[in-house]
Each structure stands twice: as C-alpha cells, then as structure tokens.
Length: 227
Image (cartoon, rainbow, N blue to C red; front, side, top):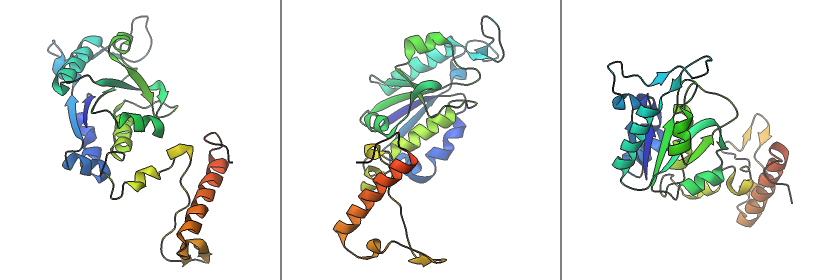
C-alpha cells in the first residue's frame, strides 16, 4: 500500500515509520509513505502557505494554491486514482469498519491541515472524504494522520505476528475485546478465571464470547446491544 501525506512537518512521522507495527510494515515495504510539503510548491521568497481569513477573525488559514499543487504532485507521483482524505474534526468519525474498507485500497492520500484549517475550496474540489479521530481540536492533522496509519497498518496481511490479532481487536464486529490475562495465575490475591486454565478450548471460546458481549454492553452500549 502507498500512502501520500500532505504536511508541513514530515519529520513528525518518524514515530510511526521507525517503531512498532507500522515501522515493521515500512521496513518490509508493505507500506510505502510519501511526503509532500506545501512549502515546496509556493512561488514567493517567503514560501508562504497561510494567510488571514477573509471576513476577519483570529488565526490563519492554509492557502489553496500550494495545497492544490502539493495534492496534484502527490497524485502524479502515486500514478493511479487516489482516494484523498482530509483529517478534520468536522469529518466522519474514524471506525474499525471504515479502516477495514480503507485497507482494500492500494493508494491513499492524507491531507494534514494546520492553523485554523484549510481554504474551503480545497475541500470542495480536491477532497473525497473528511475523517475525524474525535470531537476535539488538535494543532494540526499530523497526529490524526499517524493514528490513521497506525490503525490501518495493523490490518495489512502479515503486519502482526498473528493475523488473528487484528480480527479479534476491539470494535471488530461492533464489540470490545474480551478480558486478557497472563502469568502469574494469581497476583495479590486475584486469580485468573479457572476456565482459561482448563485447556477446554470450547469452554474458553464461550467464556470469551460472553465476556466480550458483557463488556461491550457495560462500557459501550452504543456499539451493540447484548443478545
């Protein structure tokens, strides 16, 4: 998979490109990340990428010309139709179901805004979809883009030590994950549920299913009603 990123701060992405699951997918060339800095597509000596908003108000807005030029360059570099996503608090919430759909793409383009946002004409004419990671505002779209990439990388074949791990993650099939335990079997008087030590695989599977349903009902009743 190829992911292009429009960002003023490509150096921030070292966190996802060098460590953990995402770092491994990059090293194994399962995931190729390409950066396009709008400053490289400016035409003035100051490399201006932002300006004051028409109508007044605080803050600055990212200008359309360098953004559109960067997006065009990214699409040309990726050499195929590219689904373009703008990371925005006004977007559709990112979910595990949506990530599964994105995992079927071979090329994606993420636009990370800054300041008070980007010129609306870029959204209207260049963006296929706006995605949000939550109902709060960050200083820029780089952290949401990293969250997106980390969550997506887990779904790539072979990215995890065991592909079952992704299929059993929380939010898969609208359920939270079941409780997990490891050694020691007893810790400060708290014991691991006996069924998990029984070796009875069917009983363990039933316990996990029941507890996943109960946990979802208790913690996130909005996801899936208990049956």
